[in-house]
View 1 (spheres, one colour):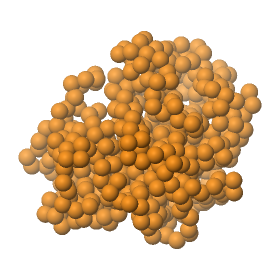
View 2 (view 1 turned 60 degrees about the vertical axis):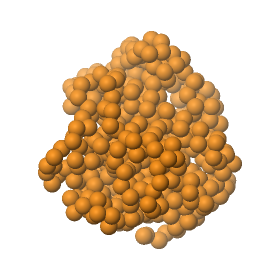
View 3 (view 1 turned 60 degrees about the horizontal axis):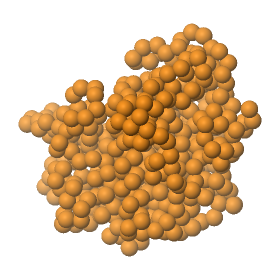
View 4 (view 1 turned 45 degrees about the vertical axis):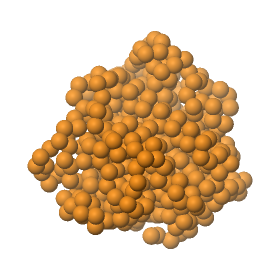
Length: 480
């Protein structure tokens, strides 16, 4: 197979890849970035089979730009190394090796996973976490695992949300997990460690940077959506600590708080009047919108929390008020949690919810904007679980098998953690051709059974540059 090697780093300390001269700025009004956390190509396919029995029926399947993305980090260290020691390099040709491999390929929390093939082992090594991946998407720079917009030389980095607000546009961030978790935090805050949830939550709320922040992490509800009368101090960590939460309740921040499903739905339907121009929405669940509810099966959803499509429509209702435009990031964050658990029913459930959120965004563009002024990007921050077909222990990368609409496909898991497999990226609208301008061809992607036009890949850092180019924003070297 022909494959082209792309080094992981241009410089050791998180240098930015150069923007090609052929990538032209478009000055789009809006960019909507939609991230299904932890979804490899077979995760996308599993939801499609469940919904439609066949592939090609999702709204993003009609997008003009369809490529893949590399997601590896700068280094798998969890703190700044201040050097190029341990830097990760990536060669996609290694992924496609079907050379037999013996023994344990990955020691997971759920158990050991056999090697089977050298390509599987390569995919399961040197993977990114969501913090480094989110930082790459938000800043265009690689960094160490655990960093939230923080460089390997221990410096704060400017993220796209800050550029967007400086340009006069509005910023919105929506997630199905806690609002200060890795991916939403990467578009809102800064920290050397993703685990500083309270500090990140405080920064998110006190900065007032975003016009819209929606997520979970409610201190007065548990993972099943049940009210909690006397939460402990730790329960407030995702909303900036108890004192910060009290200031939100007292109206002493920039944000109006909404919590109930009824209010989220009223906002999505244009029926809720806000007191100000900024809204903080914290769904009535401490963990995720739905995934962490009791049990392991799909269905029997918690009734008092909104869906991701509802959150998406609500955010767009608010953001469209800014005449200059906006940048919106929407994350289906619990897809990753389901993959960590090798829980296929809830993986499909979460991915379907994400797909419906994409549909909501596309419907908004076509009803309220157009593709000449808005770009939608659909992708993931990394793979998780190395989900493959049932005979993928014998045939490398054999695809999952459809059992018809409404039925779970036949699959086999090869990990319970992140991977560095190449992951899907779809884009439509103003500036979407940027990805085609910078993409590298790799015939090895034929392994996935995708069209020849899709057998090319970009780096995850290119998402930042594509959005900046589309919005006509010049990157500078200043730190906020």
